[in-house]
Length: 152
Image (cartoon, rainbow, N blue to C red; front, side):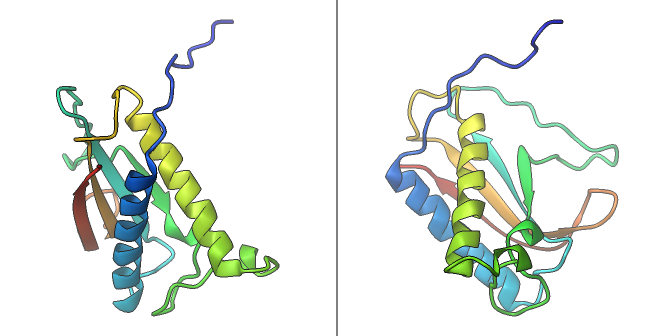
């Protein structure tokens, strides 16, 4: 049996890049929750662009662009509230909300690092983030907040 796992080395995000991603995602999720849109279907999607690296965008059957990756927000945060609260799974943690944020951000950083692994440095890489809910099948946004950032 052959191993088809890609052979790549992760490019760890710098502390400055992690801070920028964390602050941006916090703003998006606070807006999402404040608007009453932190629903069971809500998710965070992102695209990564690296200068000089061609990265074709895939599409769903309906012709809508696929994100590089997405995270279902209900895996970490409670839904149906106008404030960000931890998911029930974190109730036994010493600081439930801090634990939820830490796990969520670890997963997000890791996924971004996978897509930036072909770069030699974080600088110049742009990450576009969306938080919201898409229609089914995966297509037009029903509700979304977004922001594009350039990593330092």
